[in-house]
Amino acid sequence: MLSKFWRTVLFFTFAGVFLITAPLVVLHTAGYRYNIQNGKVLQTGILNIRSVPKGASVFIDGDLQNERTPSVIDNIGPGTHVVEVKKDGYSSWRKTLDVQSRQTTFIPSIVLFLTEPGFPRAQDIFSTQPILHPATGHLAYLKENNDQMEIWVHLSSVGDSQKIGSFPIKKNVSPTLSWSPNGQYLLVTEEKTGRALRIFDIQTGGQRLLPESSIFSFDVRDSQRGYLFDPLSATGVSLMEFNLADGSQKTLPFHSDTTLSVGTDYYTVENNAENKSEVTIISRINPQGIATILAYLPVASYQFVTAPAPYLLLQDKTHNRLVLLDTKDTTQPILLQTNAKLWDWSSSASLLFSDGFDIERYNPITHEHETITRFSQPIWALRWYPLGDELVYGTQDELSALELDRRGERNKTVLEKGLVAENIWFENEGNWVVTLGTKENGWQLMRRQLQK
Image (tube, rainbow, N blue to C red; front, side, top):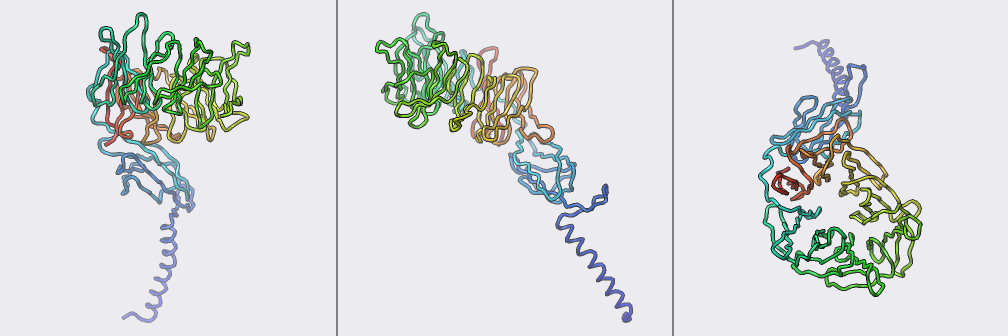
């Protein structure tokens, strides 16, 4: 049995150890660490990591962590760390990031792509160039059969083509096709003059003849509406609204080279070179027929292309340019004028575009304009990837994905080499990528699985 003296010594010893260690345990639990390099006590940071697919392993400075994605890893010492995310059968992700004391570093949109299987064999080969609908992935093409021109549609990349109609071939007339915005209708025009010939409904197989002297354009906001401009009309009426569902027509009390509807208002584009003003006028016309000028542009051949409200996007077909306007801004509606051959909208209304040798992004809400990368060889196709903050592009010899996270070096994944991808779209919400490109024996449709 210990004497009273030693019992007192032990009591104060344990009490001293407790008074020293208890605060250290509390500080350690709260994320405080002693930094040997600067001799200071600093609070640690946190990494919040999410990936597609889930369940990927996380390595920090080469050390495997217990958590798999999605994961929140705390007690990360402040400073620079190498973060890696890996999953068997998928491409890996690696980035050097700065972790700040008492802050959370978010990595919310890591995308890993399947490395196997590679590209399967071609799904179909087309002898003539098909036209792609960018939203549905439907393909349409023409096939000559004796004195008839047949229209064929490929509704699925894993299905067969089906004939939806035909029309007589006229001498010295070369027909071409274009899709309606919703992918339900096909417009047949004369390639050299742009004159409208007829419209096919791929759902019913029905067709409607159009005045051969007219020029037709689809309304990019209203899937059942189009516009007929007839410069040779005997009645003097130059612009008609055309109902695609029933074929009815309505005279519009204004002239326009291209038209778009928003509710009861119309937006119009009119070249005034004949009046020596040498400008193109963008106007809003209300239901009473009163026009309000929105903007002036240099004279060119413009057409409206798809854009989310409240924006208007005009393609200058003459000079390969895009013009972006904000319909709510009455003082400075023009947000962007830029050279662009390729473009695509993200789900968050950011515009991705390219002049063929670069990739840029513009956010019309924040007005942030960023050059993502430049190329020494032209790119042929460009699309947002729907499952993450990534873009997919095609060059003359490969299909690649590039992340948009600007911290550190951007991760690039080569999805396939030896492939000319001139059109890209995604199936099954991004689990598959489908490409259309040229081969020696014609146009070839191919598929690759990106996610399981």
